Length: 453
Image (tube, rainbow, N blue to C red; front, side):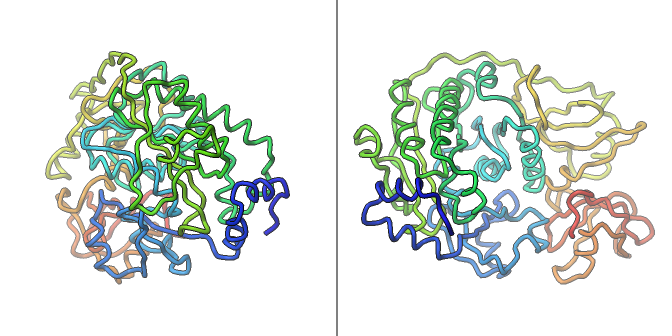
């Protein structure tokens, strides 16, 4: 692997005697991992299935190293949303962020949504989660990933951090900023990044990072936590950015990150020498099993004033009648939340959701389905957000039943045991999607864009 000379010289200066070890790390394959989705199952139960040969990731309770030869994307368990495929170092930032039930949480630079799904699992279906990416195209990937993971309480937005700060002053209990950066920590896993590397990129990223952090500071409540993370080794973008933030935002302090998680410490000598910076954490590919990563955990100690927020109101029951009748007929109980019709689609928003007028919103809570010509068509997202026991009518195939893969491919399958009408299709008790059963045949309603190829 041919690295830019300017980059290797910089790393030689930073690492000194460790430089050769760092260069040797490029001879080893990059690490791959999966993170168990605890909205669907628990880690112990997943491991008991014995599907994969896994090794625990030290800094993530639900994370495991996996060999790519096991092809985790080609397994029905992935289509059931039981795990998310994620580089192990990328699991660290959301794991470090303190999140408790009922919190308001923001993933500010979120695409493609892996960290959002991790935060959703930590919230355990409670509170309100916001996932934002300034690129609307990239934010669309978040929508699919939260649907696959069965997340009910998430808003997906595509706005600048400044625009969000204007609307959410002092609103959030916890914020994750996985900032745009030079990306040198991912050179081993994504060699194409090497082609785009320039030493000037650091200056560009620094400016962006500081602006994003300043906006995040305004949106955080007093007593709230902010995690700043990057996948660069650059001190200017890591310790330097954190130090600059603390100077400008006196109402924040750095928190110690648990060293038992296996991280290396921050490097004060690469910034202004402030000993507090040692509380930051680093992952090095020649020291830990993962790609390069930097993490800082910050706590807001002073209030800057919280804005008042009007809460969202639901649609009239008369307008919702087709959706409510469907749920009463097909589900054992209606999912809790605020039912609202937006552009012909029925959404179920978490209680206490704020009004988002004027913001670019791609998803508001759980998409339940669409009302067409007075009839309700349930969504793939609704099926994935529910468990088998919540459906009145369901079919459950064994893991080795050939109908599982046929269903995931979008085929009509024979199922004499199914009752007529809408039903949930499951495998080993885990929901895959909808079908419409008639005379022992399942008309496939699995989402077209999700189908097994």
